Image 1 (cartoon, rainbow, N blue to C red):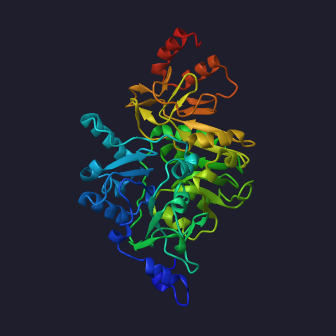
Image 2: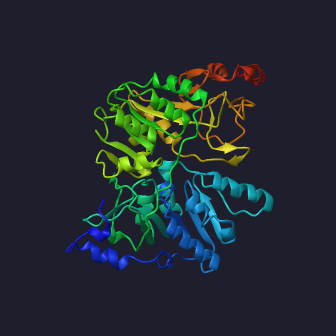
Image 3: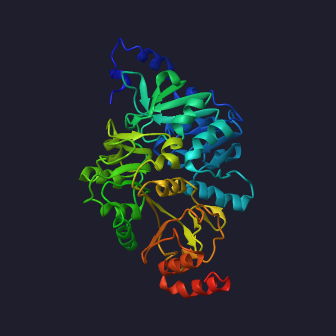
Amino acid sequence: MTSPGSVQAPNPYVSEYNRKLTTPSKAVEQIRSGSNFSFGMGAGQPPALLGAVSERLKAGDLQNLKIYYKIALEHAAKTIMAPEVLHTVELFPLFMTAFDRKIIEQQKITHKKILSYLPCYFYQIPRILTEFVSIDSFIITVSPMDKAGYFSLGTNNDYSSTVLRHARYKAVEVNKNMPRVFGESLVHVSEIDAIVENDVPLLESVNHADQPEDKVIGKYIADLIPDGATIQMGIGGIPNAVASFLGDRKDLGIHTELLCDGMIDLIKKGAVTGRRKTLHKYKSLFTLALGTKELYEFIDDNPSMESYPASYLNDPKVIAQNDNMISINSAIEIDLYGQVNAEGIAHHEFSGVGGALDFMRGAFDSRGGKSFLALYSTAKNGQVSKIVPRLENNITDPRMDTEYVVTEYGITNLKGKTTKERALALIELAHPKFRDELVSKAKEVTLI
């Protein structure tokens, strides 16, 4: 990548870059009290700019800031979500992390509402934030400027590319560690109001240790993925297990919301070529990348990797244009009707809607496509069944959309099954110690 300092005259964009280059504290002076504010999600969080916003909040110079965001990680948690500034902000996450859940626990004690989850499908977020919320100011980490005057949003396209172009004020934090990514990821220096530089390591996401069930579930799913399929999967043990069984496949493609390390491994093994894709042939598409340093280095300046806004990439109509589209997602629980809760625990938001339903619908409408919902049969060390008689939490995926369901006890396809057939099939996927209870509950309401 080319750093601004190495760009040689007579490049006309260097002077504009230098004119807009400033300190973090000056870069955030234009953020208004009482306004709607947003920042890049995941690895795109700009730590220096967020720190400067936090300093204004602590000084009382910036008040009643309404913050809209998705996937808050440590940079946000240590700055604009820190305890000492919570009295002067309102938080509106579009997907919850552990940092958001900690604030919810505080709200239960103080009874002061600080955080309120904003529910919407991922592909709708760019429109929600620009048409219905109207973000006033936006900050994000970008790659260094190239000779044509373009930064790259790198790991983050999602809502960022859309919101950045609609916001009144936008500042970027240039970081040489942010990869340069193609597609619709480029932002010109003329579109930016302020620039700061801060070369720090990008935030990484490291998978937890695999569980024994992961391999079993992964094998069930992998056996139904043909050569030439285009895949979408999330992050975690089960997706990694699926990927571990796909190394011998031919000509797989990638069209995924989240690009993770398991997919990069498949590209390196030669299993992913994109040769048989029916949309963006030979290209691996994503809207968000979150993983290890190796992932970030792989996508840097790699013309086969392209990112697009979630409004395009996650649109079910776009997803469906990929023949043999395979969608793999997880859930917190599913009931005997096929209704899925992928976001709530104990009547509180635990994660978020995300893009699972976007891909579930897109994969079903794809010619030859399949959508998989994978989950362990139990939680809390086997004390709680994840297959329940009827959901008491929010319904993330309606029963009409659920297709393949997989646990370590098997796999079933709910499409074409009656309510009785669904209930019986799902009971077979439950842990044996909960099956009799599920049968009894189903009989009580004449489901079976």
